Length: 285
Image 1 (cartoon, rainbow, N blue to C red):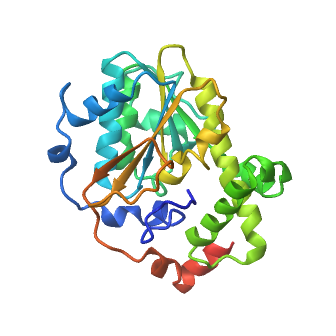
Image 2: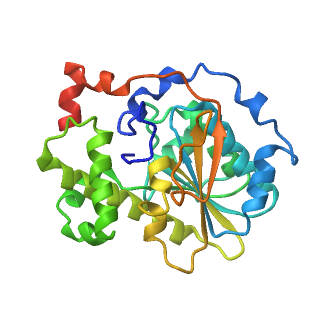
């Protein structure tokens, strides 16, 4: 979840821990009404055909979760959703063996869901829309059990060009509110690259001719020049969309194919939360 291009007020390292605090915002349904003529459905239609559609969210923006659900529904309605891939579940997890009538508890078990890190109330509607349509939901994130190995994997240092890898390291510093010791920058950057590569592999495995794999992930993972798109083969047609909770488009040209604006969230100093004594040790561990 660490990356540049994330709003300065919300370092992505902190979002899974703090997202619940911002969920009392306006109703997403008023902004994105359902139906075939809904703004989201029209926008999705305009992006097709693609092999992979990446939605880069701000984890604590309620409107983004509404867009994700409606994107799933739009692709299902067209018969074009190959799979729903999630940063919020680990690689190897899948609902493929479940029936469309599976309960939410069964789906959470199949995905190894962590409600503390990723509130099910936020992601459940999109996930269940796919399950009910008989579309597999697959975990795409690097498993925690493999993160220690990733930190020592020097091969991850050459997955990006030099300029991009340096940008990743800068993002790690900023994403951890500059609390990480310098000795941890490269190991944590390797984890970021490993996550992006794992998500790309999940897309490749779920790919089906004539259909679209939808990936829901933090905005940094969807950046074309540094994130998941860098790890996809040239024959995979991918479109990356930034969901941005802002009154104005502050995204740098070339980072994403499209930017969809949603109402801004109240300002919050997430770094202040991390600098609390109980959390500061966690950031450096």
